[in-house]
Length: 221
Length: 221
DNA sequence: ATCAATTATTTTGTATACAATATTTACAAC
DNA sequence: GTTGTAAATATTGTATACAAAATAATTGAT
Image 1 (cartoon, rainbow over the protein chains, first blue to last red):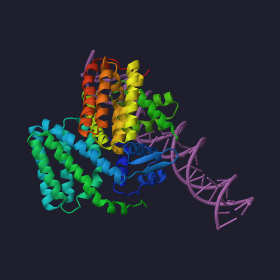
Image 2 (tube, each protein chain N blue to C red):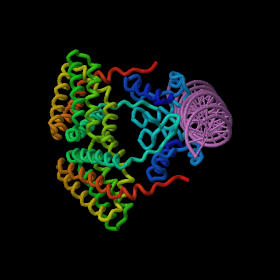
Image 3 (cartoon, helix red, strand yellow):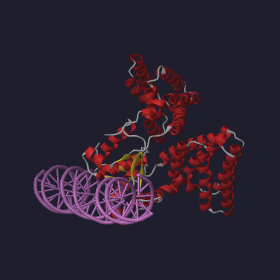
Image 4 (cartoon, rainbow over the protein chains, first blue to last red):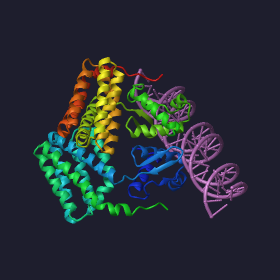
């Protein structure tokens, strides 16, 4: 797999944006960023085009690129859609899950348990991601899988915040067990419902964290 | 609203791709296209970046941009997801529809009826699009609305083909009436179900058209 | 001092130039 | 004729240059 510089720039910028390096609405100065990455404006602008397409920045002609952090309402909306996509994946996966797929899911769930026991949020985050991705893939719908992954990634930083809430990791784990049981039993409706709730709860829990989210916005020096 | 040249290029290219101007997998020659649009490669490449993000072309580093027509399986998958998004919009819209929203929907549905009676597929297509967009917007979830519109647009050329099938327009119209009734009665489950079927049927009907779809691929001279 | 108008400075958008990598062609060996 | 290799050609990726537009600074009038 080859890479162009622009790809690395896009990834870096993406990371910088989601980690809150820029304030909402802040303009991304092309020359400054180009210098920062030691490239010319050309590959940088190409990266901005891609970021704009994925909604991380807004491109205003003759004005520039402005970072776009989803507001509270939009985040709730995104979680609402994520819940539905997740439910859909669950419903399909319950019907189509193979023995091997189930085994992988159980392993991923076990990984979550271990991470929870050791209290390692980073490990839990990774195992959790694997668990969900496996369900997406088990849906047998590759377009759905890619869309689910895309939105999952977009919501990543906000979901991550939630693990800091006391007891959330345990609750999340129990929800995983429920989903796994439904999938293992081949029960589409139950699988869909448990996964929908699993994500919907994230949207609700998110409420509690808004204060801290709004207060610490950083600016690139 | 201002435009950059690149935006116009993106739109034109998008149109050219979905209307089948290029074969699947065909490489888009940057210099040739740049000449075609009377621009340099710079804005053209920026347009390609955007197209790649929306999945219309695949960018292979040091190789070029290749148009990506969804295959049969992927199209079915996309219709499956569209059905779910549509159902979700319907469910939410049934709960949140305002008087004014209902009125607009009725007008759009009436527009469909007129177009159907006159047998004008173009008019029907436009009225139909308006009908669906109104439902998306009535969901009250702006993120969902934009995602639904995005996928709707992506499937546009394939849906359009279906209207050519004998009797499809009448059937589609009846499905619209059912959905409208459910929405008007504020019945979320029925609205969701009727819209899900409405789209799912499109996916199924699509089967019949694959032969013709596969046979006429054109190449840009 | 405030505001408007004009000039200077930035900054974006695009063209062009050039370097690095792929692809094609030509040619030789078998 | 096929295969392998080397030169030639074409194509992508990036830097630089410049034109057009937007923003900031300056000046002048009230």
